[in-house]
Image 1 (cartoon, rainbow, N blue to C red):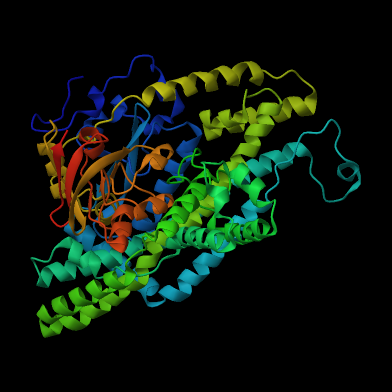
Image 2 (tube, rainbow, N blue to C red; image 1 turned 60 degrees about the vertical axis):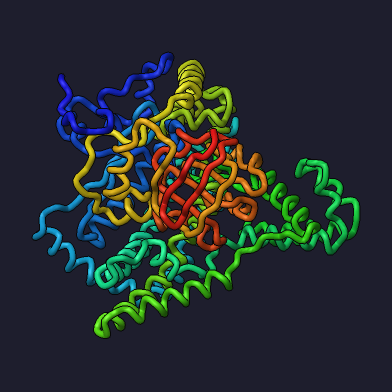
Length: 609
């Protein structure tokens, strides 16, 4: 069938993308509804799709599709069916060569927008009026959910069941307990995603309403000045990094900082510290800090390969070593919170004075609301994406270990190369043949499938996805797409104009200031340790787990992100220039290039190759 994409479209048709050599059949890893299918070509080809590199920067393993389906079910439920956000329903996704592309479903009928507004005002208003109380209950719900996950037991499969199964009145056999545990693991994940989006959209909504009011009365106000008026507020996600700095100072004070020299491994450092009373005292402080502050993922947390600091202590130990070096030299960089707050208060006073009298009351109320709800925009990630999800992935690993123990997988980690429904089928056969004593087919069936998919993902990782597919949209209206991903109408048109390269990139002016320096392109969490003092970080997107490097860099440039993305928020808090949502920084810039970052104008210039 011939392409129906208009000739003026600057982005390729999703139906024109070729499969990399050796990756034929990649589609089997994903559900049928996640693919660009000929049966809905007429609609899908005429939509705008952008690569969600913020959350899914690499080709996606089959099991991890759970963390696409469930969150998009949840965000759509809250945005479209509960709060009825007037201009936007939910988000559709498709997979191309293993990479995740998304597209919002806008509401374009003015009558429908007005109808939804009545629901939104009443329901969102209730949350805004009772924010502190409702948010406190939310935190309690999340802590209870984490506790239930921790208490979930994945039983083994004994040769003979224990006596209590035969004699106790209230008992279940292992076949039922395994299936119950697996089903409950998935449902707990769904519950987490439901909780995840309960408040998040309202956080964006309050800020978006404040932005609209500012621009209605102050049409020339820069976006970053609006963002700066809600800056300088402490949030939970800064606490883990603060704990690392505190532990570094304690190591110096106790005279045990030498254990962190010479690039020793965490195990070697622990062994050396365990040999002295002062070292054992430091280790005791470390144990106190771990719960809950080491429940940080080494990346965004939405795929299984992002382990927590508890699983992989190399990142926090490296950060502690770095902070010890800064403390020794007297050059410890701290967030300039007081300076940020002074600038926030100056901008608030000056812009407030420019408003007409009748707008000042609503403006102050919306500003206060934005500052109240702002912490949740970052804090939910600690509870959901880190504390819960790192433990949830580990719970899934327990089922992988069970399957591997019976030869259904070569390695427990291979469970992530099966879809969640395939895992259910594998468990069904495992439990059937365990119960009956029959010969399972699974050990011959599943290992070659996992091996093939693992190899396919390695090959797909070498492919470079285009930033967008389909048609250039007339307008982007989804507030989350704008605030979080930074995909605005103007930004998309900018991407479309500059598909062929060049020495300049434009993005969102996320944090003010201009600096020049050497670029460091970071494509994965494994490359964070390569970042050197005073380099400019260039990446797809940042995550809160990268917090320790913000004390070393001069500026940040990202492919994806809006004024409420993590990179934008943290750079404002650290006083670092930032340009986010450039669409193609990691494609054009290479490590070692000298670049200029103008965070005031939203411009990045390549000065020297």
